[in-house]
Length: 300
Image (cartoon, rainbow, N blue to C red; front, side, top):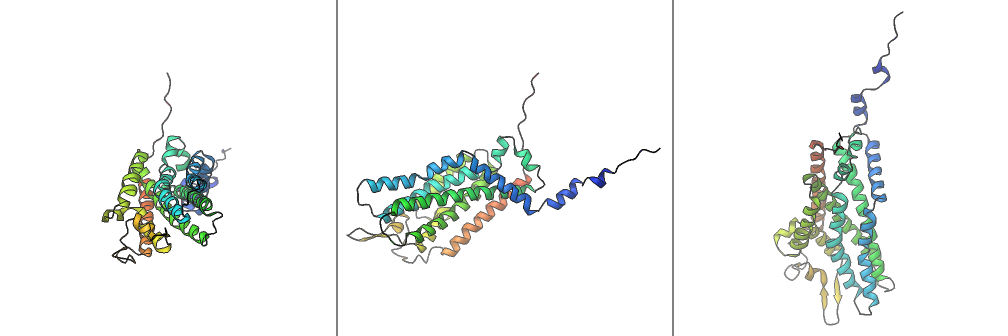
């Protein structure tokens, strides 16, 4: 009798065929996105950031409780359009996007992610999308809560529209920041130090100096869009102050309609293009980069 032999190739699909069938599939990327999003929801990171992002609302409540006649529009400008975009949003994006794959590498779980039959570039983009989603959710939460704290019971009209515009512009900035810090996270292991330095020197210092160098900042283009779609004039009784033009160093005296500055559509195109370039560059680096996992040392 001749022993029966089984053809293993007939019953088990080859790795190459499996990868070819699922490499560019939508479901694996969506599953990875959902997994990363659940990680953001169950970790302590979002709770810490949420507590930080309610600070503007707390400050607004305390300011209204003191009894001083602070105009709501002044409070709105200082909290929603100065404190949140310049102090909180870049930090939020840095916390969420800087460790898209590095966190998994430190926790020694990156092997399970990279073993999936998905190109590394798609793996990175899926996890970046989850980080952007989490950051956008917290951004909207902070802005809406701050508007409620500022304008509740004041009877000011048009608040909902202004809140929507603020969420849209801040969301655009957060997306760009996330893509930028995600790229930084692949280029350096000291991404937190580099990111905080960037936030302080570039977005914090250069954006407030009326030089050409501020055109390399994200907040400059976000401010131009904001200024064109919203009004920040406050009547103090003596004269009307244009808070945004004065604080953001916009030359409205010689150029009232800001014709010498980039248009709103150009600002939008620049930010979205920058986000796309940062994402594509990071995905390409991820495909070329080797990720190492620490293994426990053997004891004699």
